[in-house]
Length: 426
Ligand code: HOZ
Image (cartoon, rainbow, N blue to C red; front, side):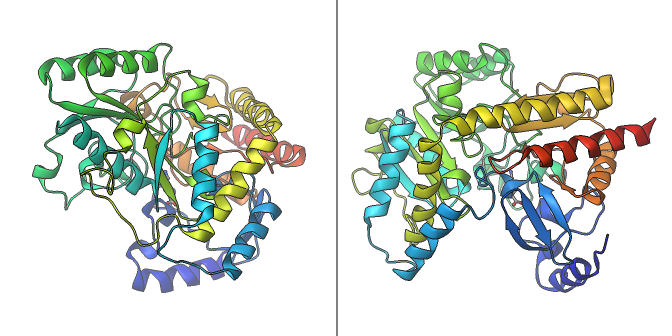
């Protein structure tokens, strides 16, 4: 497999950008290969600068639920571009996207569009603090909520991949109100509420943790979080930047039938364009400026091109609900293939189109267990799959994403590669 062009671009990039990339996991540090510089993508396939084609299971880390360059999304973006790229003024499309989101996710009674998931969670926390008049927040070890200061505490995703779950450059003062509990461990949550009576503004959680690989909530865990936050006068924030519109048209909150007070969104709602959103209970969102005293703003917020891509994507998902059954089927097929190929040597978590494969026998239920997985083995597996035309996340601590565009042939080829790698280990 040729990689000269990617290598040359990477060498050039490293002179101008830290690690040669604009987001750390992309530097392939955890897998020891040359990052692929992508030339183009269509449907389930991605093509690098050397002309190598791969079946893509990164899907831009989530937005690509319909596959790359879906014709309806591309057409909407092209039309939008011709009409102007940014106005710094409200547009009809923002209203349409907000209506669509609220219809599909009824707990989002009112929302604010922003430009990324990071901004969405940061702003939701500010709204929660403004609403409750309290300062402290609870997050979970290994959950990732973007890179704002207060949330870079025991963070997952790239932070876990590069072993800096608590980033340098974040003053201790900025994180002193961030309390950390263990995912799937109600006692650790009870303890924090017990130790900080009347002080916790909100608990923020990825309802399915998808930034330490994929870790599913144990039965009763999310209802427990709903109950304790309600009892203690704190808000429950579901970070659905990954799960929103992926686990079903109403996200994880619909799947698990737990209604959060606030929800944060990103990725799919922009169909591949930069966007984020936070929203939820009307009485909380009415605290946000200009209605209330919680300030938050953005020049590019509600961008006309991003909203066009988002509307087109959500419309496809709404008009073709069968996509979700198909995604479930494909996800289950791949997870079964992994279990068959590797047997007890692996632990596989799958829900719909999200899959986490861990090279370890024990179940992955929280950050502690996830950290026991053999990341060296994951790197080896990644490398084999890459060389056999399968493009996976270059980190144990990111999810594998399946899209509506993955075909029967793609899945068959992927299963073949999985078997090939498993055989190479015997
Ligand atoms: N933190 C992102 C995924 N969970 C990584 C995004 C990227 O590197 O593109």
